[in-house]
Length: 247
Image 1 (tube, rainbow, N blue to C red):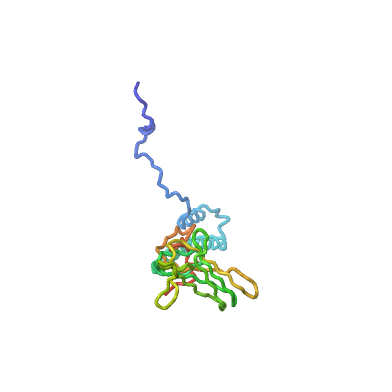
Image 2 (spheres, one colour):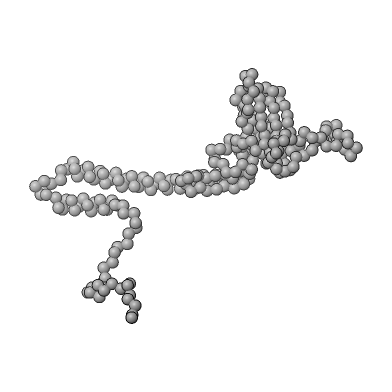
């Protein structure tokens, strides 16, 4: 038994000319301005001669077509404008790569040698300010007390030294040439800074920020997220999250 060819239509042989084809569609099914005017032309051609279209109706329809076309062009222009703005924003953000930016955070990444700079933002004048830096295990490795600070931002640099003094071989505390104690250096890792202060007679936790370098930028898809800065040790941040750019 021969195999039936299901791909061949028996009616194909009955066409005298070219086989009719279905026009390709762009899939959106939207009416264009030319479609509107074609409909208007047909409306005028088949109107009732005894009840012609009034001038005000004609003007209203023409105005509607013009408004629809104007809105369509506005949407297109706005998309082009948004694309241009995103490109401009990406170009500006790329200049931040390698720069240190200040972002709200309490985590600090110490590389074992370079100073890390944090800051505390005091809403009012403060006294009895206590600063603590803890390691990943929650152990305080460095603490300091500041007598007072004015309202505003106070920088808190940390060179990586701890509260533990280095000892000589004989067990005595080690000092430098100026007689200052030599403190142990913290290991590279992530540390947490916390600041408490007395403001108007009440102890309050103070919001902290940290200076960190921008390593790269990530271009968003324009819908769920925009352009993001990849900040070392702080993850991805928006441009609006940047409080200050170090110069």
